[in-house]
Length: 330
Image (cartoon, rainbow, N blue to C red; front, side, top):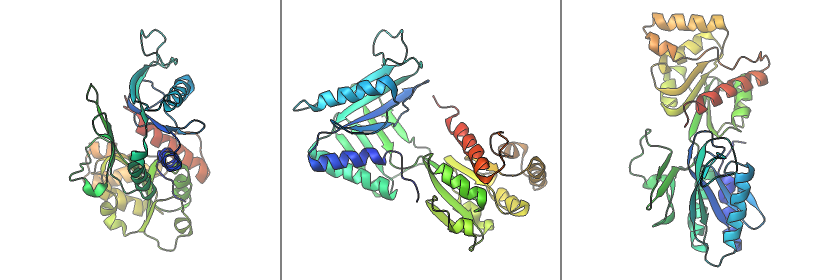
């Protein structure tokens, strides 16, 4: 079964609590920097006896959960926005952790009037329909459906936070990172099962309609049989797009790469031996691709852990995807 976005359990608990008349609060990391255990966008739903999600764990999270529960005992709980500095020597706002980063946490008590918005967010995550959620002291909690967004550039930040007295936080709903696996064989199936736990929206493409491993791939959100000559139309470019090429052989890999190599992806890699990937690069040079374009192609893919089975190879590739995803993060 395809995975859901990481935040779905948070909003499911929030919606169920509001429907039952149970006090519930949201915790949301609106900003993070450095070696912070809770990254921007991390969330929790907190009731008197239940939690869902995480804002980073450890003593810091424990204190915020207890603070949320304390606030929920008030007849009219107020939101709270507070920095958390993960350094022992910090003069104020010490989190109790020593990992040296910082994060800013929003505690937002939910009211009965928020139920339609919370249910709309939950529904958008369940069906992966997109849209935005936003918090602000003036407008409260809002949700904008994808159909109501007039313009959505691929360069628009997934998370946006404006600090200050009139602060504002907004994020897109759903998966930020999208992984396309071109090829539906054994390693593709294994990689799909691993990637399902890593918060990727997953698409698998193949040119064979009767491939058993393609048909049995229930981890993928999307499966399409295509002609590899038309692969570019099926694999949009963008800063959060990851592409792994592992078709049935060298020739079909080469066809796919000729269509994708000049397009801007966060990650583009091809599975194969050193000799095979060297031959692919040689052919791409002969086809007129520049040295810079060829240098962007990763291969052989996967971290060097001496992997042999499809499952081991999948883990090595997934580890490289995580390495790329987390590089250059503040």
